[in-house]
Image 1 (tube, rainbow, N blue to C red):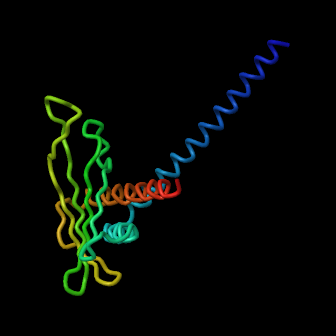
Image 2: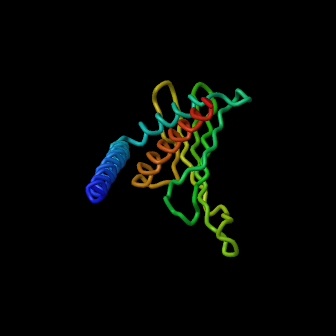
Length: 168
């Protein structure tokens, strides 16, 4: 009897483990599919989505502009942990201008936990009605697709966290 229960217990654990791995793998595959499908989008379309997501977060106290800051892991480098992202939206004449600024960090030699700014890169664009025109970008065309996808995903994840905090 003990051997039979022992084997049943092991069998149950194997089944539970298999189900857990299947569920995990399914969500990983879904995430990877969402990532790759976003890469195919035109950078202007992704900028439009970033604009909408940031505008949805609401106005700042000063109604002249909207500024949102995020700490995102854009380069997936464990040495520097996160990059600092600022999205600034403000009026210029009859249209809006959006600046997306990313500051990259590098660890100091003395203390690996302390990071200093290594580089700052910008993307600026104009929004007029439902059209976006990139004015200037410090990124190459092949870099901007990946970067904007990562920024959009990070902003959406941050918004999910904000909604969770709001519910508590």
